[in-house]
Image 1 (cartoon, helix red, strand yellow):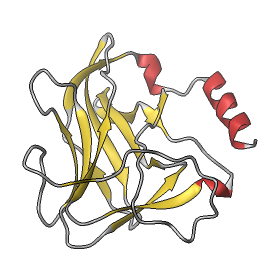
Image 2: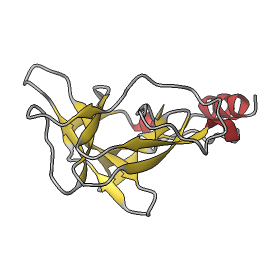
Image 3: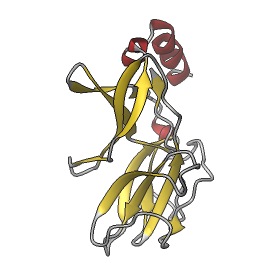
Image 4: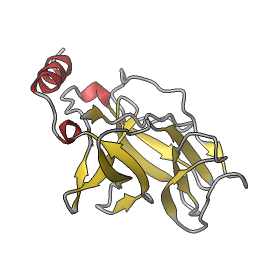
Length: 171
């Protein structure tokens, strides 16, 4: 199982953050006609700019208000899920970070989006992949799903990954 990898940056400074979180250079971009953008909604969408281009995940804010999202070391609460055994199952996880310096907020202003490159999931099991974002108000956003392949091992966190994560979060 992979760690979540949707890192973002904000042009709005989080004055309540303790500081010391890992930065990102993935700043929001203004809406344009090349990407899927829904007015009056916050959306999570898998999209390719051309048929030859790799898939990317877009988080867009078509509302009139800025969207504040919690982050840990600039990583948003977004994970991939696979449709396997007649249910959606996570194939990514978010690390449990205990250091308060890692916590901060990212702001996606009105009519802006973040683009996240995503890996090509390949494996012996045919699956559908979608992405999931938990919003601060408890609402869950889901992306559209795409065809992919996974290996059954991707549905569990290996013990060595967990131990490494625990060691890193206590440093």
